[in-house]
Length: 210
Image 1 (spheres, helix red, strand yellow):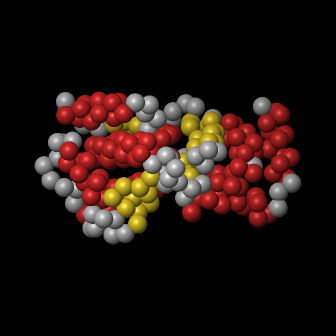
Image 2 (cartoon, rainbow, N blue to C red):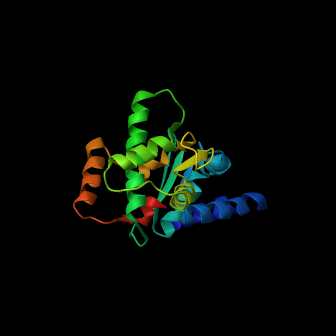
């Protein structure tokens, strides 16, 4: 512990005022929305700063009981609380849409292995939701706006176009692989089937979802 503290103090003392401010801002952002994706334009500079000061972030976060991870292939940074203090209880539609987006990400990444970003249309998402048989009507625009705000906040996707337009696209970021670390596609189908059998929501570890 002492070595980690010495490293933190030494590295921090060698930083400029601008770098210290940046460290503080990015650290607080990580603690707020546990996932950052360097492939997302608004996260790119923060990702590279974290990459440059990887050991500083890692050692500091260990002191407050967080594990720090950086996947440089996907350019994803995320943290997980060791004691699982934070939980985010999301409702049924959010859970279902997350599962479906994870499924679509997996399927499209198999088809388009050389594509930098995976994207789906809102029409495709609506069709997938309808195909579950869980809902007797489409997600309305108010629900869709709230849903998108949730997905965007946690760096899961970014939209291009209007939410009222089925041809508008959602760019899916690889953060979804870490938020829902599912290894087989049938795991997604099994979870959706659970909803049909009366499971109403998913209690997701907040350290996994934000």
